[in-house]
Length: 436
Image (tube, rainbow, N blue to C red; front, side, top):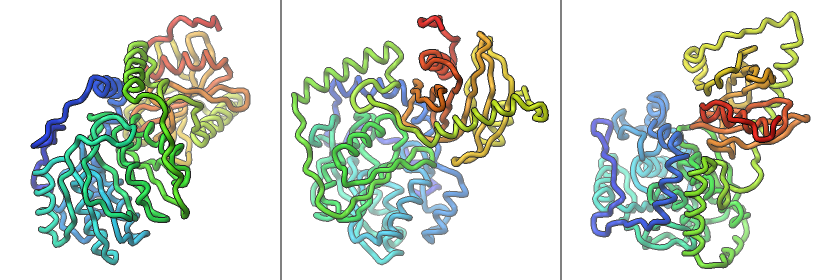
């Protein structure tokens, strides 16, 4: 399993125990696939060659030690974060859910940082055997066990690992499985291991930018208040970082109601919302609630103020030329389409905490002045815009893959959401039901 070999996609079927999804799980899979395809598509990228070379040099591994990353495998940013955590914690016990490239990286990092044991679990028996042999080729070892899918993880949907011989104490928990196609929330079941976390232990959840994992993170924050969770930007898939404080974890809260009834009601709601085009708004489960994206929204608001000041200054030269290809090539930012009938008043590049950003001052088909702010970022928003207000302005923001956008203007919130939805969807602005 080096870069000399192609690693095939693994199916959901275990060799001895086929996985059969129920209709509720299938409904969630299709619903989240419909809104989450930008994250899934972007997740096919495994990181830059430079990042991979740096990782291999950091671990003193040959150039062809790792497989071609991307697809269902961890990207280089997540692998670097595993090494960071091991260098910081010097953990005695590491547990990994989902074996593969991360197994070699974790085992090698442990070997270079004072030892420690790696216990890895995966649902594919043949892959477990091949991974063990692969690690032996590089002089490192781990306890890699076959854990077929089929168990139930508390009230989490989907099929969970049938775990055995899990260490009583865990210093670092790496979560890169099971696959999202079982259920978008399936990795939430990893919380069955949280009670084993040692004081100061760290959790690393891969693919944290996906909508399903964001729901998982929201639930975890509520259920485990003594674990500080932070979603880290960077990489192609995002990482959720959790650190347990000292002291006893709160007991797992009682979940009232019938799980089966709750699942089918939510699945029915999901299907209805997808049909209405508003599933990405997060109208079910933990996707409900006020969005918090303070840093990104504040930056967009500040850029609006600067852009309006520029518009009023005769000495500031405005550029109405929009070259999308040049912006993508130079800044790595992909801009959404401008709706038909709108005009461009100014195009500028601004600095931001997350790198360069692009600002477009626009006039709508009603001559309303609005500003689009775009940069790489992660916010609580999805494909359908959310809104916040700053300084009597409304900011409607959304995400597409790794990019976040905010449309700002001194317009009613309903109107701003309508305009932002048109830009996010690439469609014409529909008839305004509020008549604004």
